[in-house]
Length: 323
Ligand code: ATP
Image 1: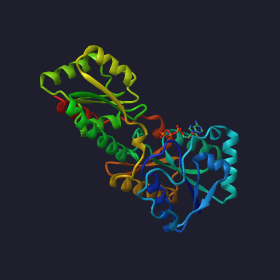
Image 2: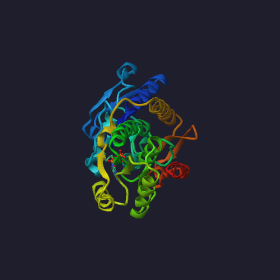
Image 3: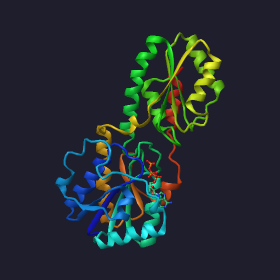
Image 4: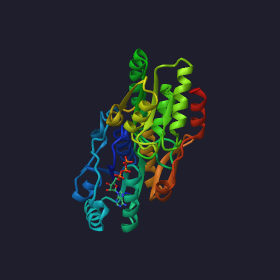
C-alpha cells in the first residue's frame, strides 16, 4: 500500500490512542502516507479523513479513549453506505485500512474488504477480551486494573460494616474481566457466563464464609452472567440471608476510562506496528494479535466466529483460593 487509513470503531477502550500512534509512526517509518478517519465507519462514509504525521500523535500514548473518536454506524451496514465509504477512500488515494475495534467492527471490515477487494487489517481494541486470536485485547488490562482498584475500596467499607457487596463489572458475553478481578481482589465468588453458578452454590459459599468467620465479602458479577440481573441476585440473597447487609455496586463506564497501563501501551504499540507490517507483506482480512508473546495474524473469519475461551486454569485457581 502507499496510503494507509486508520480508524477506531465500536466501544472505546484505553490504549486505542497508543495503537493509533503506533500505526501512524510505523507507517511514517516505512515511508507510507497515513490518514486518520474520525468517528469510525461513519467517518469513512462522511469522508472525514485527515492526513497525519509522526507529530500528530504526540502526547496521546498515555490518554484513555481515542482521539479519532469511535462510533457505531448503521449506514455502514448497508451496501450504499459501504459504496460511499469506498468511493471516499479511492478519492483520497487510500489503498489500505486498519480497523481498531471488536468483533462487530471486524465483521464490517471483512464484508467491506470482500466487496471492494480492499486490503484491511484489524487490531483488537475492546475491554472485554472476547476475541479469538489474541491472548489479550487492548484495554482489557487497564479495565481490570480499574475494576480491582474500585473493588479494593469497596472491600474497605465492606469490612468495616460486615457487609456483602455484589459488584458488577463489564463483559457482555464473557467473564474475562469478572474472573481476573475476582482473583486479583480476593472475591468470595464470581458469577459469569462461563461458570453457570446456581443459587444453591452461592448460598453454600456464603454459609461457608460465615462458618469461617469471614463476615465481609465481595461477589463479582459479570453483566452478561446467566443467573440474572444483579438486583435480582441481591433480592434472592436478601431473602435467604435476612440478617446480612447486602449492597450492590455497578462499576459501569468507569472501566472504560483512564490512562492505559504499561501492559496495554506495550500491547497497543506491538499490534499497531504489526498491523502496518502485515499490510506491507500483503496480509489481508486478518486481525493482528499476540499469542504466547508472539505476534500472529488470524483471519477475520476465525476471529469473528470462534469463541475466546477463559483459561480453565484461572477458574481452578479461583476455586482453590476461595476456600
Ligand atoms: P465492542 O466489542 O467494543 O462493542 P465492536 O466492534 O464489536 O466493539 P459493534 O458495535 O458490534 O462494536 O460494531 C461496530 C460497527 O461495526 C457497527 O456500528 C457497524 O458499523 C459495523 N458492523 C458491525 N457488524 C456489521 C455488519 N454485519 N455489516 C457491516 N458493518 C457492520
